[in-house]
Length: 275
Ligand code: NAP
Image (tube, rainbow, N blue to C red; front, side, top):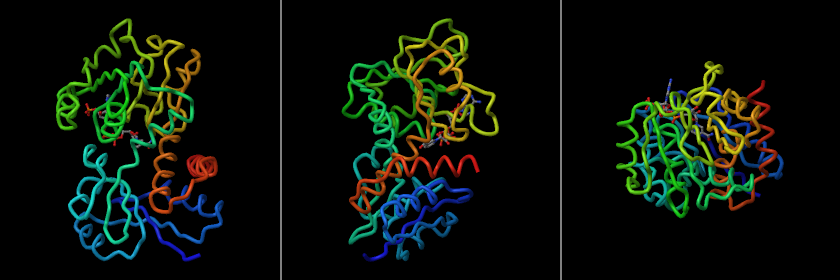
């Protein structure tokens, strides 16, 4: 089989989890392909995209938006999210966003159906975009959004064209109210609780209820304070590690048309995170 070459590009690229995750998948499937990590400075991005001989790349911060200018085609979801994290180089340079499907497949894996569920999304930064598009496209979920800076939440739903589908509530409700709004699933897309601030959580433990399903997008640490608090009172939890793996798996489907070895990829990410 002909070897194909892939990489993740970012600046800085640091300790990439994509490399060990994809390398483990290729090894498990006996594929000869390679996966590298490349630090590409913003001023070199256009030239890199024009001249690379790679077969596909993952794109991370700070290039997810800027790279769109240099592509021939962009998927509808990536256009709506306004961010590309996966590019395939065939006759055309095509940009995709796999975060939204990574989120959906993480829920599906746990048997969670979004239909008619009340979903509270916390955070209106970069990660929130794919989650909001995922929840409002083709899903009959009732979506509520809150963000520390409320104006950013209002601007984001307008930018994504989903202002009629998302209700925005005050961030103070998360910490001062004695009752969260009627919620089935809580998705934390903020960085609250991320390393090195492992002692923080966006929701006080006393506001959590055993019937809440908690999806924390943070994957470092693997188990955040929010997840630990939730598990202690009996909630079902999903880690950002699951979404990370499922978005990577979707990249492999796009590039190679294969069914990725999800568990192998999870094991590789976990090994990298604890080493
Ligand atoms: P970002 O664009 O910088 O957004 C950060 C968000 O966190 C904003 O909503 C911000 O609110 C909020 N925030 C930050 N500090 C806060 C605090 N002290 N109190 C309340 N809110 C606070 O970051 P991002 O790219 O969206 O990433 C967010 C997290 O998601 C990171 O931990 C990242 O690793 C994770 N992530 C995971 C995946 C995955 O596949 N699992 C994918 C992408 C990202 P303001 O608007 O008020 O500043």
